[in-house]
Length: 268
Image 1 (cartoon, rainbow, N blue to C red):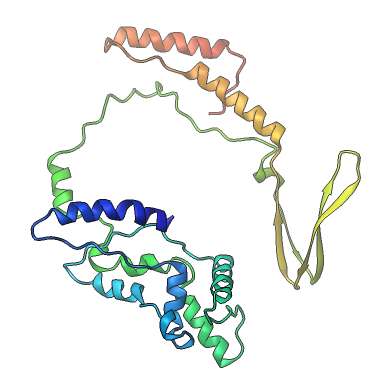
Image 2: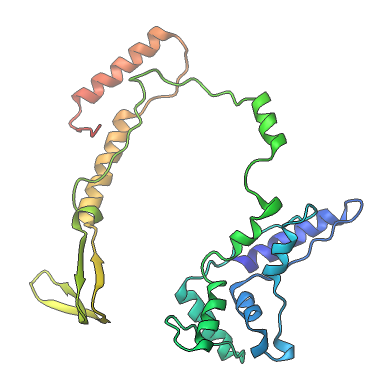
């Protein structure tokens, strides 16, 4: 995603910036997950494998008034993504350490601390400092106050047909089960229509493991969709072509009568 966005957006930005006076240079900076991992362990790499710590450099740049940083999508890095990236780097000859989830030795604790700065949304807190603040700038707020947005005509009380619906059964909320188990082997089984069971997976767990499971009934979900689509058709309002109050009231009365005669029961 990040590479695709870079190669599609960067030439456009560079073209526009090259036409400015003076010329504004737009340069890429690699803050990918692999780049962040390699930058964290320079002492374990050969001279040809070294990469700059771009995230730290951008964090310092973000605090300056002259910085303009265009941040593209990047991997937030969950533990599975981190482990996959480490395995790929090690397979390509980069001597980065494995991720120690439960470090015991000083070396493992040091590696764990460095990986902690790579895991999760490590990029956003750094680049949102200083002039990367997401709040609207003062001039933008003042313009909005001087030029308030004009909203359209809002239906009177009791005329709006919008509502919120939810399933009453057969969904994840109804079926969820949670349990704390002791250590051992946990089996995930599929019970067939004829009553026989098939073991899908076996998982080793430690004492105090919290297991949670739920399912969605396809039959109940389809019935809910059909009910809601039918309800939406009955509640639908035709496009308003007049502002005459009497005609609007008559239209509302006709729709109310249609709803009352329908077999659909609404959840208000």
